[in-house]
Image (cartoon, rainbow, N blue to C red; front, top):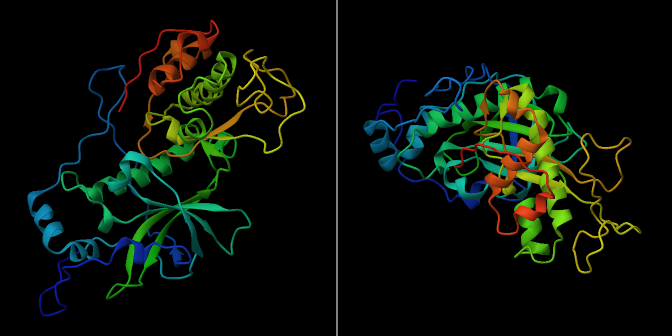
Amino acid sequence: MPRRSEAQAPRSRKRPDIESVYQSGASFSLFYPERLPDKPVQRIVVPGAIPRWPQLRLDPELRKQLRKVPLDACYERNIAYRTHPVATTIKLEEGLSTGFREEQAAQVWRVSSPSYTESLVARLYDPLYYNNLSTDRFAGIERSVAIYNEAYKHLKSLEGSHVPALRGIFVAEISVGFPKPRYIYCVLSDYAPGTDMRRLFKEHDPDGKKTCDHHKAALIDCAARLLYDFFPLTIYPHDMYTRNVVMDIPDTPSLENFCDVEGCPWRNKIHIDLEFPRSQPEHQYAPKAKMIDLDILRFMEPKAWMLDISYCRSWIVKLWNAAWISSECLCGHTGDSEVETA
């Protein structure tokens, strides 16, 4: 889009505080995009190795513009959308953490919409509030949205069970506090009830000394089973850390004890079944989890040795590298793994 001339409008040097734009109760209209980003292209460094995403270096001229007139830079790169009809509206309810990538990631909110009865999650990719000046944020957003679009083509059979169901990729109109509306990508999906694994342990067993080894193994196994089902669909979940794995544990404890360790926080909350596959029907208190952040996953044909639950378990152990994980907690279910960590 051509740059606006000085005669058309004053240069926009300031941006509103993020809290004044994204706050509980704020509402945004969502439109259908004219087109979605092209399929993302990975970089193969070594044939057969884990693919990588190319670096998105920031052009010096764009860096200068983002420093001096960031709002103008964003207006010039508004996302094209179909003006009619409005797809739906969303109302922000609760801000959700995106972890260590918050300065270069979407605004993530639990939202409601008149078009859906369920609670939803909106990922609002607003380049104005990205604070990283070493990476091309606009290209990064295009790639993140393209990854979501491509990932859900692969994950169709696992929507709702392994990942939240996708409701659509839209363009959100952001107008309050700005001289004219801005248009950004919004990925809308179902809200995954529960607590992420990082917070779960922080709240119930921060040093991992209360949880018995069998329950540690059950928690690792729960995530490993997600991985086991991702690999055949050519999904390599590079960012499957504890902050991105949400576990839904029943509120009402079971009358049955699932381990013999007094004080284990999961004693009557998480059923232990390390047999593979699990017995059917699945136990009511079997641990259930979803991966909630797909922004930087990768796509690759699995190697034969990746399609083994022992490999998946050891992959999770190595990736998480948590203080509460010990070699004993795998209860003999081990395997060699190669994991690329962030």
